[in-house]
Image (tube, rainbow, N blue to C red; front, side):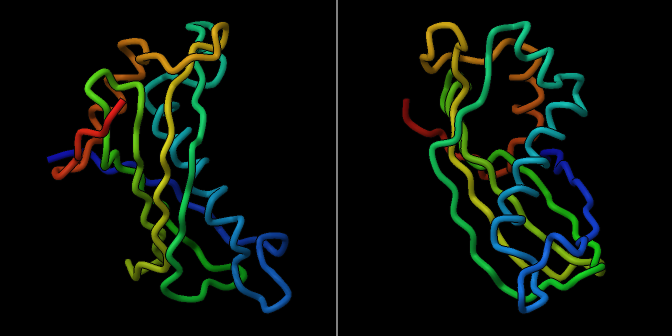
Length: 146
């Protein structure tokens, strides 16, 4: 069974819109922070990745909102790899946003790739970051195209 990485957030006053709901952009920002947290937890922060000459690029994201989230609520954002190319260069991440008690409030899907920061071309990740991503694969992870 794969590992599910979770990052926790408290909804702050600047996270909400005029209706008092968690702003739509925050769901995406929380998902991005969770993805970075997955790598950082394995010892791969932004500086370590830059030293290896790789970075992530995002090709697209979509969000499905299920329930409202309000100021001062606690949410957990899970991060799992639900799609991966055979060389590990391209990835699809699934994120579940849940409030305390486990109720799922949103689902975020992100599609991206690793690039060589010098050539700006899609490239397989170094062994360390690749191992971190492999460890976060969902049980039904799909092989995605190049």
